[in-house]
Length: 288
Image 1: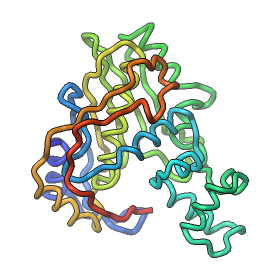
Image 2: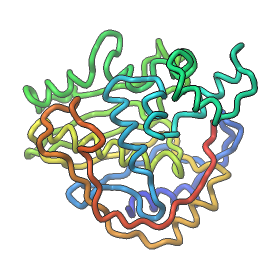
Image 3: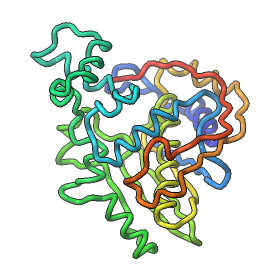
Image 4: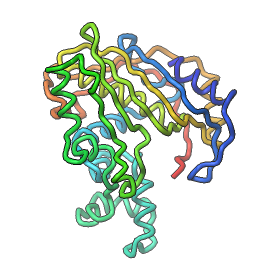
C-alpha cells in the first residue's frame, strides 16, 4: 500500500493548515490521485488493522439502497452511529440517553429505529433511486450491452437532496471503464479523511469493482482513487506518523463466491479475506 503511505507523506510535507466544518482543524491538499492494480492483491491497509466486516456490511447496505442504520447496528457496525445520534440529541424525544442507550433502542425498538435511525437520502438512496433512476442497474446493463460506453457514471451527489442528508456524500462520483476484458473503476472523492476514511474507501470501492466484474463476466482491473480536499485532521497526525514508521506487508487476497451471478445476491458470507497480516489497529476520533 505504498500509494496510501505516499499520500500521507505528501500531505504532512505539503499540506496547508485549514479550519473545517467540525472545528478540529486539518492539514490539507487539493487534488491527489492513487492507483491500485487489483491483480496485485486486495488493497487493504496493512500498516494498521482495518475492520473489513464494517466495510463489507456498509457496501451491502449501499447496494440495497438502505439509509437506516438499523441494518448496520444489527451487524455490530458502528461507523455511521455518530450522525443520527447527534440528530437524536436535538430532538424532543431525547431524554439524556447515552450513545449505548441509543444503539440499544435502535436494535430493540423498530419504531424508534424508523424515526431516529434514518440518515436521509444518503448513498444507497442515490445509487438506487436518483430522481427515479436506478443507477446501479443502469451501469450493470451498460456493462453487459455497451461496455465501451463513456457514460457509465454513478453519482451520489444530488444537489436537490443534500439538505435532507445527515452527511453530504464524501465519495461522490464513480465511473466504470472496460478495456481488454478488464473492468476498472475511478472514484472522485470530494472530501477525504486520510486516517479514518480513506482506508475504508479504498477497500470498499475495490470490493465493489470486484463484485461488479464477477457478475458482468469481466476481470478486475484498476481502482483509481481521485481526491479533492485530502486532509489529515490535527488529532490524527501522530497516528499517521506511526503508520509511516511501519513497513507495509504483502496485500491480502479477497475471494468472492463464484456462484453469485447478480450484484444484488451477494451476502456477507460470500466474501472471504485470506492472508491478511496487519499491524495492530490504531484508534482515532471521528470528526462529526
